[in-house]
Length: 312
Ligand SMILES: Nc1nc2c(ncn2[C@@H]2O[C@H](COP(=O)(O)OP(=O)(O)OP(=O)(O)O)[C@@H](O)[C@H]2O)c(=O)[nH]1
Ligand SMILES: [Mg+2]
Image: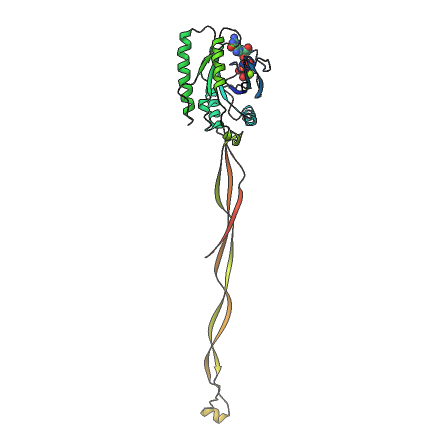
């Protein structure tokens, strides 16, 4: 009995993810688009068999070049991946009739590298070209080499190690003309061990990075007078104890007061300066960066405070 292999499909809209999902599960659970408009809006899965191999196929919404990495589709997709008990591989679904690797696809691949982090994602990824008709074996051989190299450089640019030889398959999901390629694809899927997804479990579906930053802010400044006791000295005239009658006084009987200086002290409350009281708060906030590079700040939260007093 083969164990179920979990395969995630990723690719631009209309490339044939849902169609190949139906083919690889032998069911018709995924809705295929009838025109160029994007059909799949939600990431969802289906378990079925491809020949004897049980496959749990995870179909994702295809994004357009105008879509950003912050769309709710991406958030729902990452949230869905976190619920998967295991993941074996990812197939990047391209269209052989339009083989350009679009900017959005590049960004999606980078997103996958970010969310799977060091889980050896680069060695569990393959590229599958659908709509493989009207292409010669020589073109296929050339494109396989080119595609493998460009995917490898996109993946390694994110810092994740990538297999030198990313497998590339050319299939046509609507005909039976590419049975050999489907067989090779099946064997590759079967050979994929489970990815280590412990880091994926910790990933935030909205934010790629959450950092904290701190600041110290001055919240208030008040000034108070400094009042101190000051001892003051002054002189007063006080009469001498002895009376000097003098010549005239003696005659007239008038007594003349003789004065002397006496030093006295007094203690007064005097403003000797000013003190400036400042209150500071240390604050912290989260700086959150979305997968699309948008930066969102949480409100500042006070984590400590201090008061300083300085004399002026
Ligand atoms: N001839 C041919 N047609 C295909 C093949 N794969 C898909 N199609 C057709 O291409 C159209 C788009 O296929 P879908 O499977 O809906 O594409 P998708 O990648 O799921 O698109 P979204 O859900 O919008 O992201 C449908 O009309 C399919 O029938 C293929 O290998 N050969
Ligand atoms: Mg679809």
